[in-house]
Length: 180
Image (cartoon, rainbow, N blue to C red; front, side, top):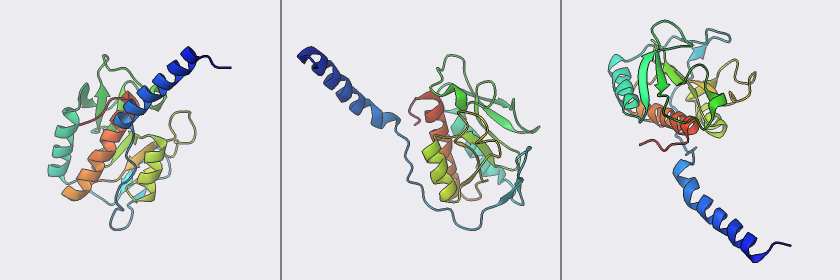
């Protein structure tokens, strides 16, 4: 039988959790992507085929990612030459360390504008179902990688908005911190 003090502690913890959870919850409502999905390779290197980056959009994306707290842009540790890694500073505690592919890199953008990112698995499924992403070929081969996806190159400002929503979702999932 639960005593009053135990019940109070349980209720207080539940109330606190209910108040905190929405700040970190992943929004899985994303619009459907227009047009056909770009083709990708089935192995590693996992690359997108036939879609080129729009340099101005990539520049805007990198600027916004660099504004995330505790993120430094730099050469990738795990991808192709020319890719830019989104590195978490060492003072950021990792909420999902198994989702990190290498070092403290939670995502990276390839020279063609496509990205690899570690998303919360439900958000990854929503992104795949809505046509924004495809699972990485190794996503089912390592614990913590269930949400590791390639996000297709944004070609319009509207697409960039959704891609940035997914990158912020990756940041929040890996760090447990809200993204602006």
